[in-house]
Length: 457
Ligand code: ARG
Image: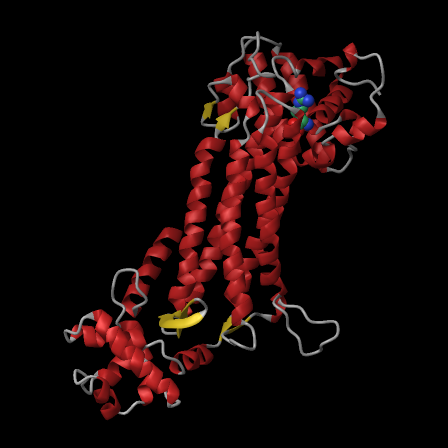
């Protein structure tokens, strides 16, 4: 088969080379972006008088025909044609004949692929923002159902201070909110159009880059043609935002795995989101959160992969850059699946409120509150901390919790104690007393929930 660039060659390409260098197996993912870019380009060529309006009509109709055939599954892409750009061009030539050859006037695959990839990343960034929105809605719904649910808050995975379960959940709302913000912010930079940069130096044709940028929904053009075809920082940014998002998903997943264990018994994931064991009939495994946690690794890997591909490249385009796509496609697939599962899994999980409360009642996580109590009576906090430390030790040695200690036992440690100490120790009171802004106190969490709901609109 003759190559679109075959003119200066005297030999057929080696079969292995053809297969190894082709990207069609994955960049066919960009078919719609590629056709949209071509339509914008050819329309501009006609409007600038570089080709005839009738030629443009023929080419646009041909491109639409190609797209329709692809959608109908009537097209077989070939490795001989290397990538999506040349496959589409070849299909166009088959469709409309020689005039199709005018499409590539004033354009190179280098600005073409960069344009396609910008359009793709832009679209997927918008999808991620929407999917994150759905996850946040699930979190808000669960939070609403758990505005009174008290659970132990942890540090070092040791019970630390009681918190509302709504508060714990909403922590993830804000992480996802910042992920959304990072995606939104990155759109500013994805919205630069590389089209018209040519191979690297621009073109001799009197093209109009503003027109194609506008037609494709970009906000501006790259001011430097070499930069336009060389950098993939917009893809790196997508991968790094995705990596941070996966970190959040992974941490939440880890909690779901813990909480649904026999040891915690804080939640029960819906049967629809769990799987069984082939040997142990009693098992109900939290495979989904485990896999979300596990798949985080590949997203980090995709980021590291592309950073490494780019780090040593001289300007401008190098074939290495063909390696930019698969990691991004894989990341999109991974995140898309993760977010689509996370939303319903969170919405359907059962919260075992009584077990959470039991865990709080049977521990010493109210200790800070008696230290605060003594500090409020004028004892320097450090001394109060010391006194309470001794009380906790005494209680542990006597197999009691702080609420079980008799009033005279308290008084042995400090005569600042009064009968109202028991009210301070009640977990519900301990939570309610955290009235500082952003704290776990009931009113604060309600205010936080309002903010969250307002953001979701
Ligand atoms: N398939 C190539 C890529 O993905 C398209 C650009 C090829 N340009 C070139 N001069 N070989 O990067």
